[in-house]
Length: 277
Ligand code: F6R
Image (tube, rainbow, N blue to C red; front, top):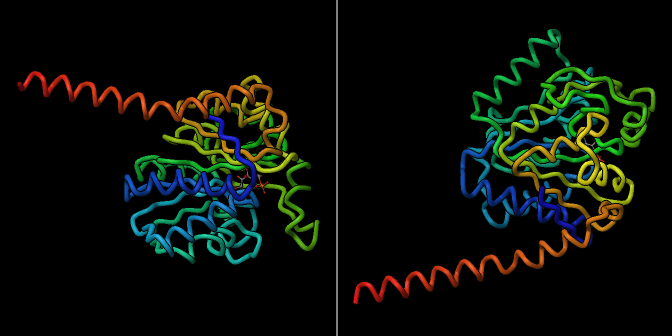
């Protein structure tokens, strides 16, 4: 697990967007897993900027969102479909046929969830999954106690999550108690994971996820088992990390990797030139 600590939430968004854009440039038919909530907003603003000013091309990109509230239609301003459309999709050249957000209006829940999993497989799997984290350590809506092998299914949200989500609803009684969500197993099948968090309110969850034991009580801790996860946090969210010095040490030393490899290449070339006479 790579931990990148930056000063502000704005920088968190920029670093995450840079990683996503690099992946999209390398593979035009990139399969991108997306999150909603307040944390990824800056990442989406930056991706939109890269599209408008730098020509970042979404025409062949396929997206899969993590979750959706049960009972909300796509047109509801608090639905995650609406959120994605307003904050990313309508600003870029993505083909609407390539957008996948779980439906909040399902009749056959099991059938729908199985089909969603199959769609991810048919798309070739997720190349990069962007994640936020809940105060209770949830990723997607895998609340504490969710199986670390879980797949897409219906979950009951905790009281804490319902309270956190209430800030964007006019009527607290309207806040959904259930969500259709990718499972922890679905998330960690992604080839690369980028988890982002801002502010001291997320500090304990980040500590549990990064330095705590792997446990279903903090489903983000399952990312410790993933071979390619990058955690990008601001100072507030990093404030409880105990190995902070080591993460900074890695960052400072990593800068030398490029120089060392370049030196080796130059040395090899010199030797080959000698062989050629
Ligand atoms: C949303 C999602 C959730 C959020 C988490 C943090 O699609 O999957 O796990 O990432 O609840 O939400 P914010 O960013 O609003 O603090």
